[in-house]
Amino acid sequence: MASRYAEPMARLIEELKKLPGVGTRSAQRFAFHILRSSDEDAAALADAVRALKAGLRLCSTCNNVTDVDPCIYCASPTRNQRLVCVVEEPTSIASVERTQGYQGVYHVLHGTLSPLHGVGPDQLRSSNLLARVDRGEVDEVILATSPTLEGEATASWLAGALRGRSVKITRIATGVPAGSDIEYADEVTMARAMEGRREL
Image (cartoon, rainbow, N blue to C red):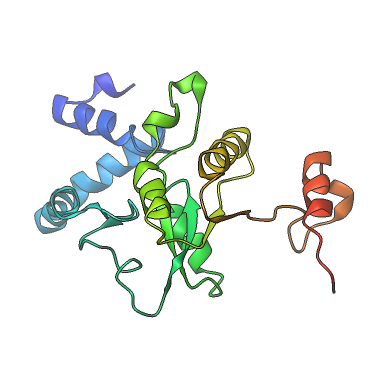
């Protein structure tokens, strides 16, 4: 338990435990690593955290985390500004970018619908996307939310909000992952794979 440590150590452990995936033991290891680090290394870490909070903001166009506004994607002259991929979090952009095949731009919702956690449509950052569509700046919106219950509900809600506007609405295909055995696919995954089939 963190309370047996000196107050500054206990406080740091409690703060580190707030990070996703960090339990008490990991927080203790991190805290003792910082304690054993040189003063310069500890100061550099603290400065990096302060600079992160002071220097980053949300892109006014797509809500991506950025140090310049608009972000590098929205400002890029080589990207298709009329093709928008909607993702749940800024971290999802890296997954799409790794494919090296997508050349459009993004829109970050910063979450998914989750009534159990009090997250409704008003808590999602979708208004600037709807405004872009209404201004006629978008030809296609790709809904790339996760294939979870919350992700599907969010995609369904957003598709409904976009319907009736002059924009093509598509959903990313989901199904059996490459390199896996069909034998182990659950019924939802297999159904999605069949729905997303394409002609060869």
